[in-house]
Every structure is written in structure tokens, then in C-alpha cells.
Length: 295
Image (tube, rainbow, N blue to C red; front, side, top):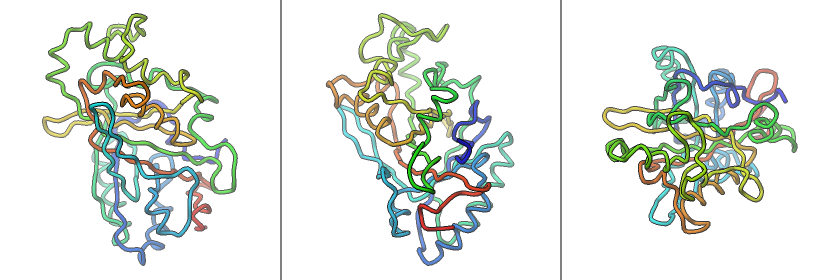
């Protein structure tokens, strides 16, 4: 399958990236803004996703797209901060990313107004700032394609993907005060060699999110990256799937809604944002917006 935004599956995660979130401000200016968006987004160095409110403004429907749920779990909360448009810019130079993001923001005005921006980066070879490797259980090659991309359906939908995004803020002081044994049991892996622990508790993150343990299996492709803002830091979680169901099943179990057991991850981190977006496929080098009745 070649007609998808290649940045979705490109590995490793890029050295630097920017997540830009936009609110729809002028429906009248929307057609011109989308025309400009198609010239600025190549699907590789820039991946774009549409929120449900933007799709509704175009008087169409994308099956499976919905608003991120504000999910209250067993003593934990997953907020929804849904926006109309999301752009994920990749690059190797922070200055170049700044210039590109400024150009994109200017091009989308006055139809869109940027309401959130998060700068992220690759740590070591793809690790969280806690030092633990991220995305160990990611599917690869054909399995990644099957997990992340819609493989059949109408024109303008095949090759599309759904993105689930959460910004997690870590409590480093609390985490670092724990023993190495306790930290490993939160993750379900040893920090030293990334090996999964046979004796990890049922609350361990690895056990809560074991993709093959769901019915149906809940495989997604994770492209998460760390962030730092002043004295706050954490992980910008990003997962792609051919639907949003797999991610949501994992989040429900993590939140204790399946069996009353919450993921140990909530002991050292908490989500502060949450959004769902539909990422259209590509056609002839451009975004394929036929499902939105554009192009």
C-alpha cells in the first residue's frame, strides 16, 4: 500500500517534531485554507489529521471518527481537549521547524487559529525521559501496515489512518524517589535490558496494554516522543490505527474500567490532553480529500 501519508510509518521517530493543533475560526475561509494545506503537507515531513468538528463543518462523515472521550476511570482521569485540525511536522533542525510552523499557521489563517503547540524530540534511540524504551511491542512491516492503515473501503478512505494523541506529564520527583524494583514493576520491564518481567504485577503497563490480550487484538503503531516545557516534561503519546477502537480498548483497561485495576503508569504520570484525528490518504503526491468531497 503506497497511498498513505508516509510519515505515519516512517522509522525511527524523527529527531525533532512539532504538534500543532488548530480551531476552526471561519467556515467561509475554509476552502482556500484547505487548498493551501494541500500544497504545504507532503505526508512525510508533515502529517495532517482532521477532527470530527472540521469534518462536520464540511457536511460529510468519516465512519469511525469521533471526539476523544473524557474518560473517568478508577481514581484516574483522561481529559478530552479535542481540536479541529492537527499537524505533525518532522525535521532535523529546530529552527527549520519553527519557520515551517510559522508559514503553516499564516497560510491557514483566517480559517484556522492555532490553539496549542507542542515541541517534541527523540531521546536516545527512542526512549521515554524515564529511560525506558518506548514502543517495544510495535508491529513492524506488513503487520504495521495492517494495524495502522485502512486496507479496504471507498476511494479516498483506503490508506487513511486514525491518530490518538495524549500529552502525558510525568512526576519525575515521585518516580525517582521509588526504588529501581518499584519503577520496573510500574513499567513491567527492566530498565537495564528492556526485558519483560515475568513476575510483574497485573497493574504493570506492559500487562495492561498487551495488544494480543484483547478480543479482538488491539494492535496500534506508536510514534510517541518526549517533550520539555520549562520544569515540566513528559511524553507526547501518539498512536495510529485503522480504527480508534484498539487504542480506546487499551485506554479503558489502563483506566481500570475493564477489571477495576488501573495501570501503574498513572502513579508517575497523568494525561493532560486528548484528541482523535482522521489522517487522509495520499493521491499523486497530495492529500486525498475525496472523502471530504474535496478534489
